[in-house]
Image 1 (cartoon, chains in turn green, cyan):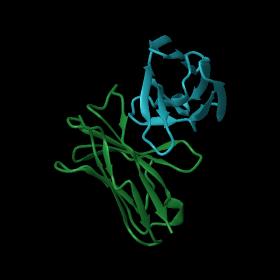
Image 2: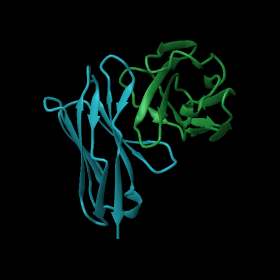
Image 3: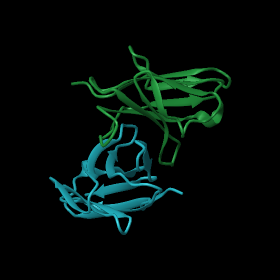
Image 4: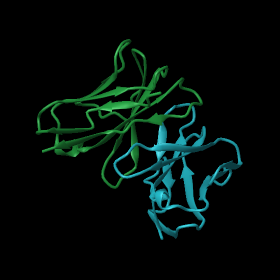
Length: 114
Length: 110
């Protein structure tokens, strides 16, 4: 009974490159959430998706960041033209349905921008 | 605005009891969660309160007072493996997003 899977676990990019972070939710879960954790800070909500739909992207920076959750395959968080300030741990969570459900977190992807 | 406050660090002794407090001010409220996070690992779900009162689950209990905007996590019979960060999070009203505090780092010593 696999939990939320994220890959890669660690990602190093140079400034200006693209970063792609993948999240496979718990089997049967159709709701995915992305959070970012900066050093010494709390988790900050970025985006909430259902299959093929973005439900809430109020925490997503307006530029360079995008997310998708296609009908088939994992959810992808894409960061274009990375900058040093993007260095953080990015966590994905999933729930079976949206309303009233507990979110279960993956192990995170630690992005380091050189 | 949204604000979740919890102490930054706490220390306790193996076998003891520790209470981690959390106060919140959010625009909406649809439940309060506690998660445990060991360094470099995923947050792990511990408890969920949506109504006032105490929820007990083994060595861990969580309390909620909605009128006071206050919750606590109580850990009994502390073990060394309980050394971790404990995250308080509020689900924001009709939205599904969780608003997290910065976490309380608990160090359990022998």
